[in-house]
Length: 73
Image (tube, rainbow, N blue to C red; front, side, top):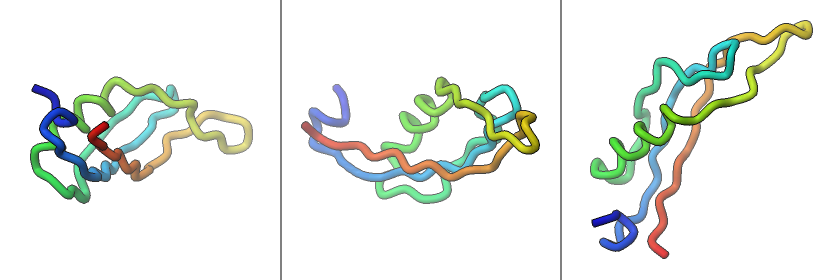
């Protein structure tokens, strides 16, 4: 059963590094409103790909924090 069906909503903030190829690395939970949402958030973020940051026209790694909101609809 999904979290939305259970009516569980919340916010999970994940700290991670986007490498120079746009891949997610070193992801970790830095804030969470519900422990039950942490694993699904980490599973999802590992599948994401980003456009890497650029410095002087060259792709570089960048540390970011990303909030993921879970809502029941």
